[in-house]
Structure formats: C-alpha cells, structure tokens
Amino acid sequence: MSAPARIVIVGNGQAGIQLVDSLRAGGFAGTITVVGEEEHFPYQRPPLSKDYLAAGGTPGPLPLRARQFFAGARVESLQGVAVTGIDRANRTVALSDGTVLGYDKLVLATGAANRALGVPGAGLGGIFTLRTLAEAEAIRRRLEAVRSAVVVGAGFIGLEFAAAARARGIPVTVLEYASRPMARALTPVTGAWFANAHRRMGTVLRLDEGIAGFASDGAGNVEAAVSTSGETYPADLVLAGVGVVPRTELAESAGLAVENGIAVDGQLRTSDPHIYALGDCASYPSAHAGTRIRLESVQNATDQARHAARSILGTHSPGTPDYAELPWFWSQQGTAKLQIAGLSAPDDRTVVRGDPGTGRFSVFCYRQGTLAAVESVNQPADHLAARRLLAGGLPLAPEQAADLGFDLKAHSRQAPAAV
Image 1 (cartoon, rainbow, N blue to C red):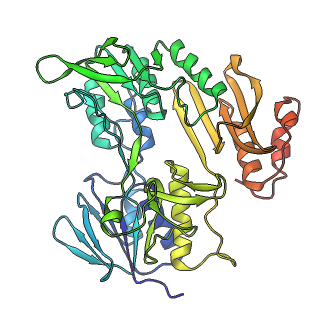
Image 2: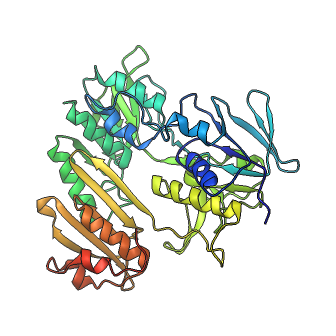
Image 3: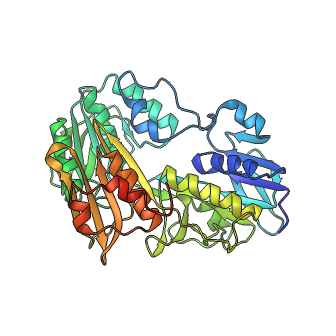
C-alpha cells in the first residue's frame, strides 16, 4: 500500500489534531491540511464546562497542542474556514473562502452540534448551549450577574455546569424528563447517588419534569422557565443540555453512508475508501457493545485518530485488526469524580464495591456472567483496575468484585493488556 501524498482533515478538535500527531509520528512525510470552522487556536473542550466556568477558574482555553507543534509538524492549519462540499470523483473539497483543495485521503472529524430546544421562547437572550469556546465565554460573562439559573437536562454537561454555578452561590434548578440523572449512561445506583449529591450542593433537581417553554422579561431576554408540570422557575440564565447530533451534513451531501453518524468500518473508512471519519461524528461496529455505536468522548476521539493513522499509512500489525479500544469516560461534578470503563446496559447485573454512603464506591456491571462495565465514584484505583480487566479480558467473579478484602489492583495486573 503506497502512502498518500496529501491528507485533508476536516475539523481541528481532539480527533483531528491527534490524527496530525499520529500521522507524523508514523512517518508520514506528505502534506497535511487541517480545516477548522472556529477562528480560535485548537483547544480542549472538556474544561469548558468545568474549570473554565468556576469562579477564579482557568482564564483562557487550554490548547490541544503548543503552537510550536504545528510548525514542527509542518501542518497547514486553516482556521475560521468551513468545508462546503466534497467532490468525490475529483477528490477535492470546496471551502467557504472559495479555495478548492485536492486530497488523496480525506478525514471527516466534524464532531457534533448541540441539540436545539424546540419549545416556545427558546430563542430568547440568556438561553445557551455549551460546546464551543465562544459559548463558554458568553456564559462565563453572564454568570457574573446571574440571580438564578435553570438547566434543562441532567446529563454530564448540565450537571457539570450546575455544580460550577452552585459553587458560585447561584441558585440552580435542573429539569430532567427522566426519572434519574444521566439515565442513559449510569446504573440506578450511581444515578441515585449523584441525584443526592447535587441536592446536597443545594441544586433543586426536578426529575420526571421536562421543559415546556420560556417566559420573556419583555425586552427579549429569558425571565423564567416553564416546565411540563406547569411550574414556573425564575431564571435569567438557562443552559440547554439535551444532547448533541453528529455533524453529518457534508457526508450526506457527498452520498456517504450515514447511520447515527457517518458510518465507518473497523478501519474507520467510510463507504468511500478514500474518506475516513472519526470521533463524535462517526458510528462504528463496536466489539464491546456488539453493535454499531457512536461515542462522544476524548478517549474515543484520541484512540480512533491513532487507529486511523495506522490504517491510512498501512502500518497495522499483521491481520489488520479492527478498532476495538475499550471505551472510558469521566466527569467532574463539584467534588465528585465519576469514571466509567466499558459500556453498561439496562439489564446488566450490578454489584456494588464499597459503601455509597461514604462517597467512595464502584458499581460492577455483569452481562451473561461477564464483566462489561464499571462505574467508579471517587475511586480512581478501581477505575484503573477496571480498565485493565476489561481491556485484557481477565475474568472477575461478582463475589470478588464485592469483596473489599479482595486485592483488585493486584488481580488486574495479571491482565494481558495494560491500560
């Protein structure tokens, strides 16, 4: 397999920049062009809902790489420019500034976009989503004068924001249509613990209650949120955290297969062998889930970028293995650190290690007798052990997981694959 001469990467987030790093580390000597819609230097997104919003927090975004990295990697970095179309027949992409770029391999790392609220008043001033630096800056400025806030959606971003706002002393109400927070990601045990943790922070957590609309102050700004129960909650800041949708518009217009994201195979190739997709925008066949999934995490973006680089350069080990890295996630909500290894399912059998009442515990999830996922709260050692166990396929009996006298760390070190 001959190496491509020119690679164009659409998206300068975690996946796109890691791909640059991995391509150069893998010996690629050709031209790399990265196209990013935002005018900002490539930055890390996870801190935007945590440290960046905290009182006295990080004064500026954390860069994905130091500026000298881009010069050293000989990267043509285009910022504030969008790709408007893909010509697959001629292997070119058109940019919003009128430029046309040729490619041998094209990589779509377009990420995801916040899901909009489709309720009356959703366009009022003071209603935000949080994904980009511009949104985080606008929220941070408004937090300085906020009297009360409402969060729509008790997912990771919404609860991270709620914790940051409460730390500033701002009254916060969270509206969540499900019966527990982070319901799609967590077991009932861990979800219930976080519900109580946020209430201890002083957050008003309204479960089984969604958003019906917003009331205006008469000057075009939000004054209150109206829930599906008919209750009205005062708010001069609203954060909508109701999930994201993958950015697939380019792929769709180019005729690429789309299935809950840009569909890729185990080598992260789309239905066009000259085009790859990775990160939040891509759905792939998961060995851990047993079906096609799409993940939104730094780990997935980073690991897929490394895998895609090897696939593009043809440097995989013998057998050309498909992408099969273990998914893992984390969230910091106030003083509580949540870490997840693997993918749980609603019907999993759960075993608790430790006492949730102490604020330090883990939930081990078993599927057909096999460990499938582990949720850890303020237990980083359990999380690292879980990653070793799951990545290496080392068995762990439910009785061992529940027994605090069992040396989980020592057992995990017997796993054939290290984290």
